[in-house]
Length: 230
Image (cartoon, rainbow, N blue to C red; front, side, top):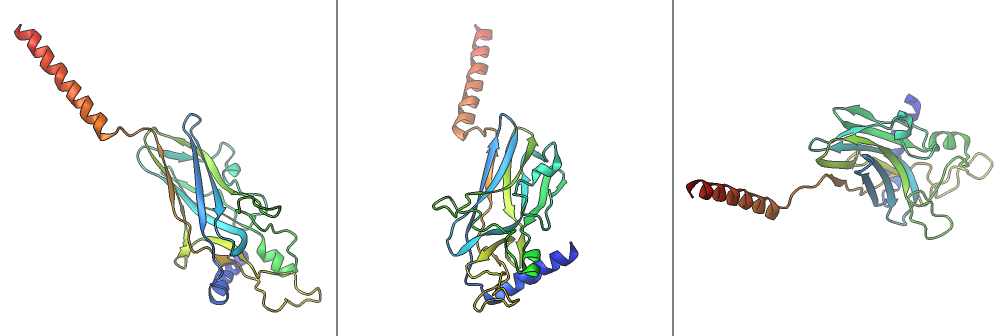
């Protein structure tokens, strides 16, 4: 695991230096079922300048009285396909906040074996052709509480979102004779944009509703006083 993590960090550095022009915009999609008290996160790849999502590391946090829980079977909290097996975690749950939930495709093995058959490209692209895999499932869980927000934020690595992508010139298969092809890269790159998203849990009264309720209360008090004086 230590070697794999180190290789991933080196890959980020290589990609920043060599193919920084290839970058993507990731959109998180957060769904909250307030009846079932569950939440789910997917990601959509918004730009065609890459070959899909290779890995992710995200935080899911809350405000108000909302507290997160993992799935009853904790391993199911990481909702990504099984191919996202490197540095795969269900996150750290503390004080109702879930941080560092991650999963990366097995690019280390693919590089070592010069074989990408275990990788899946085009994850995150909304289906527009036979190659697109659609939104990528990331995480899911439960929550308690009645009023607040649930927020999804990418962790940061080197000042960029910790979401990795396959660049267009990514190739680990080589020429079949143990050599990588010219003008290809064997490193993933980071997305340049992955804005946080949030969903409101519960209903916050509109200011006008609060004012009307206050006026109604005042009216009841005045009415009661009038009855007493009569």
